[in-house]
Length: 230
Image (tube, one colour):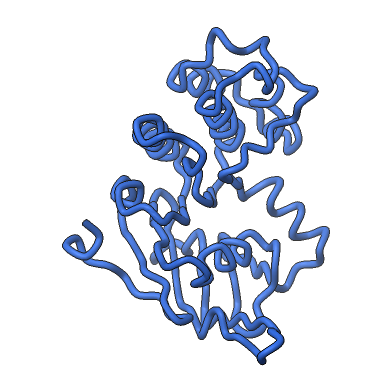
């Protein structure tokens, strides 16, 4: 028997009211992602990529259809239930780093793992070493470069080995060279943690680091083949 998808979207519809009338952002999207798989979501600005990611995280709810994380209906949970899901099973990595200014690097990294009671000192040390943060642990976020801050955000997101990682333009604030280096490490460490990864990006180069690529256009999702994704 096949394992349940880590992320499963079935007939997901999302509409927004606009002054000129209702806009359909997602028109019956079907999408699934297994544990250990990674997928990039591409599309024009305003096509609904971030909306799809927010629905996967339970930050918003679909107007029709269902969103399931590890077999659990996200759209069937209360607000507190969705918050618990994000704490325990879903990690979010954004273009903005959202580090806690009053905590040093070491405490920022272990923050979510401590929150959900899944601290793993050995894996945390592995993340710190691979991300080149060993000599930064006593510093505070304002003392770090943008690239270093993003590495801390990645370490924090992965330290508790979440089943699902959702990333929205995670290297968007970095220059091209830093983006390439951080993305390569990010994907490698996601695999080390055994997570599923869905990443929104506008960059074909960044999308190329992931297993599969999808294109969102006029509310519909389609898979890109290797030639189209290049």
